[in-house]
Length: 333
Image (tube, rainbow, N blue to C red):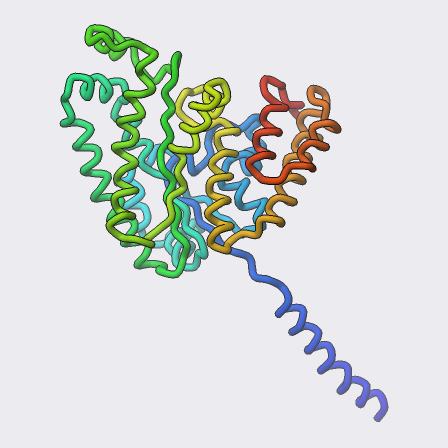
């Protein structure tokens, strides 16, 4: 009888403890990343095994403790993304289901709408006051972005939607401007020191698609302004600005991804989807662990780690870390 009474007492206590633990466990924020090769994070990491700790989607996911899924696809234009999000779930990817259940939907797109159209040729056309090609790109992007936003909001109106703008990758020595385009521009009296400004004007025309939609539909999404962030750094420090672009002259470097993570972090903290103190603590630990794992032979890890520990923001950590490892070879293993 005494044994039965003990069991009857312990079972409710166990169940109550289980429920209390479950209630105290905070459910993770679910994030899905959509878009192109920038969103996929296919380039810029060194070594490639660091992809999830260097690409902005992984940086955001790890330092904020998110449950994150990446469904960005290299080479995608806005039309490709529009078609992709309308596909029914298949296999293990389950993209529509992930969109419908996400707390945050992040989109990186429009870069290929521009770059796959030959930016050198676009610069030449605009310099000749021929806007036919760029206007066609912008018009097509306007239609696609409007539909993408409407479909995503239709799937999941409660999610925080973030759309990232395209940065200007052009600087002196950049190989995206072909020799043919350089010759055509020279005939117009336009030389390499003018390329960045002209490219910036074209990139801004494409980014205006995102800004104009938001102006017409206030609150539809937040803009992670990659264009402004990269441009501000380049204007202040051209040497660092060039370091934000990978050696292929198109994709962001690991540091460029760090900048993207930081501008997105600001939005996430302002909207209550991220805790600044927790993110800062986690980011310090992540970058120090990378130093210890990859740069113990080439960097004064102890000194740099000490500086990182004193940092007051994620952006400060990004600058400290990448300044420390600049032109240093990682310990491949």
